[in-house]
Amino acid sequence: MCKENEKETVVEINEAIIAGKRALSALKEARQSLKCASDWGIADLVGGGFFINMIKHSKLEDASQKLESAKQHMQVFQQELSDVVLPYEIHIRVDGFLTFADFFFDGLIADWLVQSRLKEAREEIDNAIYYVSTTITDLQNYEKQYMLEKGAY
Image 1 (cartoon, one colour):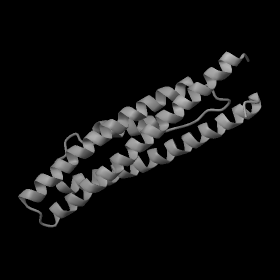
Image 2 (image 1 turned 135 degrees about the horizontal axis):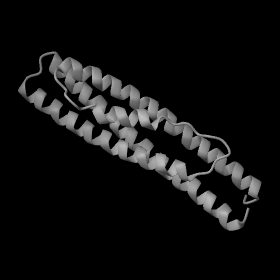
Image 3 (image 1 turned 90 degrees about the vertical axis):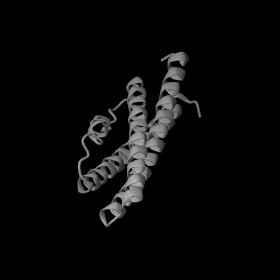
Image 4 (image 1 turned 45 degrees about the vertical axis):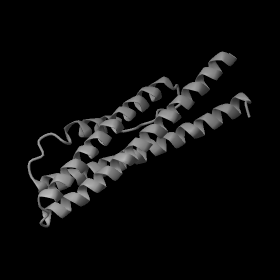
């Protein structure tokens, strides 16, 4: 393999790692936002009122925006992963998360349904965080091994 291809491989791996870290950060922000919305939803369930309801809806809107941001970062990460040629296949459940994020805020009808969907969303985000973290670690390990094999260290 020529030096130019080796350099390109390292660049692609680093781009994937950077995209993964951005996706991970966006997922963590979305998880925190969902927790906050859930807390206000519980307050609304136990006898909130107009102001609690308004705050809850504001927090739900914020969570929706954070989920959309996480979705976009996950798509970029998935694209960057496809640019990396690995000796083995890295599996990440991006598609499931993207589908979930698409329908999450469609047709929220009742407060109990909101709480149920918030819980499901946090679980999906936790799963996505796990897979993205694992994939980043795999990429970093692969990069180190690749560099060692090519004598770059």
